[in-house]
Length: 116
Image (tube, rainbow, N blue to C red; front, top):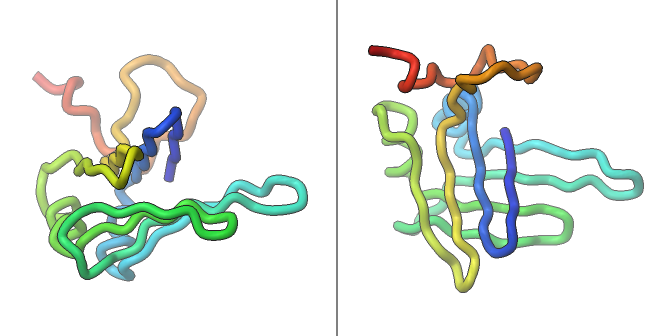
């Protein structure tokens, strides 16, 4: 899972297996092991109807409704956006890059721009 933060914007990008894990377990998370304290970023199923977000201790937590999880997992829907206060939220499928990259993209979604 990738996390991109820029000012008041938080964007999560999920691979195919991460979307499957979210659909099966209702949660998916990753950790960046900073010295002294890790940064945890996760997505959790919530009962509400809109995306939510919070920063709890050392965790950035995005809440996503069950209906969005199901649509993300079972359809061609790319993602969902929302806003909490001033913070804009985006959760989306991670597509393979078109240009050359050294990053492992074997679990990314096929890029729709590569098909005719």
